[in-house]
Image 1 (cartoon, rainbow, N blue to C red):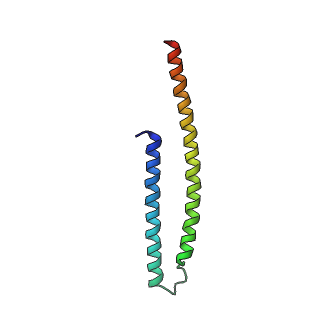
Image 2 (image 1 turned 120 degrees about the horizontal axis):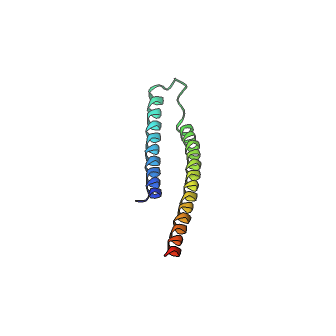
Image 3 (image 1 turned 180 degrees about the horizontal axis):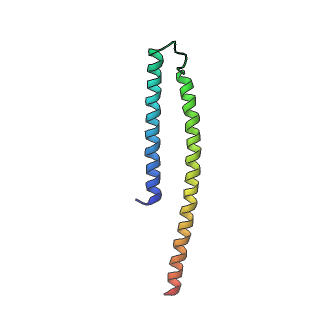
Length: 92
């Protein structure tokens, strides 16, 4: 597996783990709100989902920027390799 593929796989694993963590936290907050309905600190499930959505959007933006940077590195690497092969062919 090449480095970019490995990074993409790690990113996907990270997103899955993060999503599961958020789901677990939402469930815990829901249980806490049921156990302590008068605490006033518990957020509604809709508020929690909205907050999670904002967080995931910011993470999606960061991931997109990282992916674009990775694509630029891949292009630079491909150009370097092509130039090296061309130089080797010219030398032969």
